[in-house]
Each structure stands twice: as C-alpha cells, then as structure tokens.
Length: 405
Image (cartoon, rainbow, N blue to C red; front, side, top):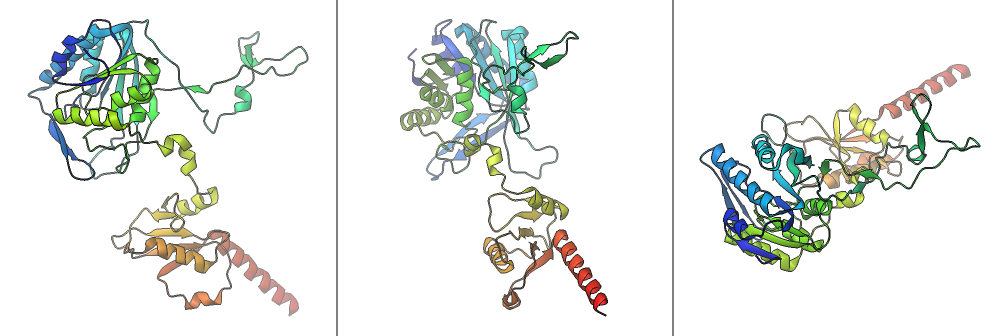
C-alpha cells in the first residue's frame, strides 16, 4: 500500500493490504456508539459532512472494533503502539477488547484529554474529557519522554538540590565535606502525565473544517511525539478529516489514512495540501497568563457572590444570581480610575446587552462634583474597606469636634 496517502474504503478490508510488522503507530478515533447520525456544516455553509454512528447492538459495534484491533496488532512493528480514542459511552467495553487482543500486560496508559466546555442544562456532571487508551504490541515499545514546566507552587530551589538517604533511610539534602548543600543535575521539567489539558477547537479557528468530531492537531502531535521518531509510519484507519495525517506530515512522519466516506477523503487530502494548523494561545502562554484579577479584586467579587471575568476592561465579574432574568455585570474601580471613568467603562461594555442592573464597586473616595450630572443607571456600592475608612474619618472628625468644644 502506498504511504503518504489517504485511502477511500472500509478500513477492515483495506488493512488487509498492509504488510505485517510495518507500522510504527496506529491511532484511531472510531465512532463512539452514540447511536445517532453526526452532521456538521463548514464555516461558509458550502458543505455538510456527516457520518452514521448507529449499530444494531453493542455486540455488533464491539465486533467491528475487535477486527480493527486484530489487524492493527498484525501490521504493527514489535516496537509499535496503538492509541484508541473513545469516550464514556463504550470505553469500559473497549478496554476489555483491547486487553483480550493486545494483552493486559501491554496496557501502558489511560490518557485523559480534558478541555473546557460550555455548560448545558443536562442533568448530571458536565462532560469535559475523553479517553485515549495507550497499548503497545510488546514490552519493547518505543517511547519518548516529554517534559512539562514545574507548577507555580513548586519550590524549584529545593528541586535543584541533590538528595541522599541518611542512616535511617530518610531522604535528606546532600552536603559536601564543608557542610554546603550539593546542587543536583540539570532538570528538564516534569515528565508528561496522563492528564492533558488541551483546548477543544475554537469555533473560529482556521484549522476548523466543519467535520463532526474533528480533533485539534496539537493533540495528535503530542501522541505522535510520544511513540515515534522522524521517518516512522503512522496509520489512522478512521481518519475522518485527516487530522492524524496532518500532524504526521507536520512532524516529518510517513502516514496512511483510511476512511469510508468519500467526502472525508477529499477533505483530508485538501488539508494535507493546505497544512493549516492553529496555535493554542492557552498552551503557548499557559493558563496563568489569562488570570488578570488581583487577590483584592477576587476577594471583592467573592464577597458579593460573583464570578470573575478576565481580559475585559469594563466588566470584572457577574453576580451568580440574575436580576429580573438578566445577568448583573460588576465593575471594580481601579486605582488609576475616577468614579466617572469607571462608570463609563461599565456602560460601554454593557451597551446593547439589556442588563437590568449594573453594579460598580467604589474603592476610592471621590470629590468629583460632575458625577452628579452624569446620567447613569449604575448602582454604586462602596467597598467594605472604603466604608471602614470613611467611618474612621467620621469618628475622627467627631472626636476632634468634641476636643474643640
């Protein structure tokens, strides 16, 4: 079978054409047994993509999965691995099939792909992760350790000091003959864990094609980097829009994609020509870069039972409870803002939103007389700190007046 190619057809049949022991990594994202038809239209509404995820029974579905895994085992090199992507619908069934075909001893990891999703009205916990089962063909599997940064709470100065066991077997800092702490070897960071926080594709991302269940390229590049080297062969028997093949090409791996949908094959080939890959600002910057609120501001919002809002100069939060059926935006007066400027920013950010109530938390004393000429429906609440300060000033003036009497 030709490499660096997308093949149209039933993967169970097409896998028969691939030689034994020839593939380094197989990733597949099969239907999840949702028992419904998935459809989605691309951004310019010019094309609708669809695939059917309906089966007569769970046994029929698992039989299909098992045949693909059996073929995968045959064509994998002894150093090769399988990554099977699924969700809660049938993951517990699929794990048993993987154990049976590839062997429980060859189970390596259950990778949790977690992401933020919009809330919905569904009863129960919000679905915010999917599962990727990682199995090897043998114990001689290829694995490249990836590293991540230390968390903000890690005491790096302690991490970078060497340790040893004392006479009681307790881990202590190693010291030289003069009693000085011995510095340890260079650290590369924390080895990648089995929980990956990778954002779901933004609806406006250039990478988005309109194909249902499309996964981000960055998720696949991480999987491919773990288990292959440049020049290795990656195969996806349910390639859909071609994300696995795009990631493989980007990382200079060889690839084979198979899909039963002619539209999907056409789309995947187009993506391999264009090679559009969206960067994730969350991954590039880190989640902490999106936190702009100070501890004082977070405390003010918490005191009035409000959610914080990041990266908005006019709104700092929203009350958790609506007023009159509408959200209530909160603005906190900044150190460099007059009360009038703070009100204007809140009004501007709220324009056209039909908020019934808007609240400004005043944090500084003001003597701006023209505030009284400013027409606004903003409710001004003085912060507890400001109220305390004003009360103290009032008491001081009363005491001073008594002294003068």
